[in-house]
Image 1: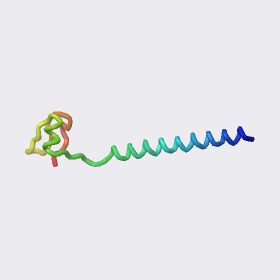
Image 2 (image 1 turned 135 degrees about the vertical axis):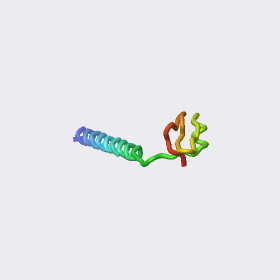
Image 3 (image 1 turned 30 degrees about the horizontal axis):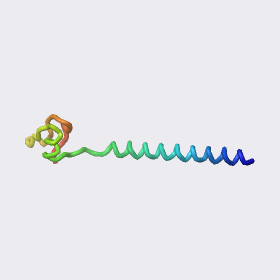
Image 4 (image 1 turned 180 degrees about the vertical axis):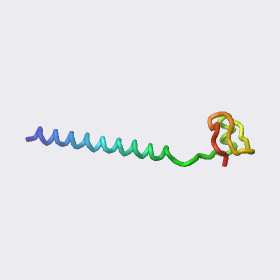
Length: 69
């Protein structure tokens, strides 16, 4: 009887831990799908790029192609 209770507790804990991991993965995926990102001209320069204010994009560096706000 005691071993059944322990086994049931272990299975329940594993099931709840699995649900927590899937919820965290779903939350991360939902956050990653956000709208367009914007960077400031100084962020563009700090990332090694050049802020092109004629078409409001960052050229080169980490933020290459990102829109400048």
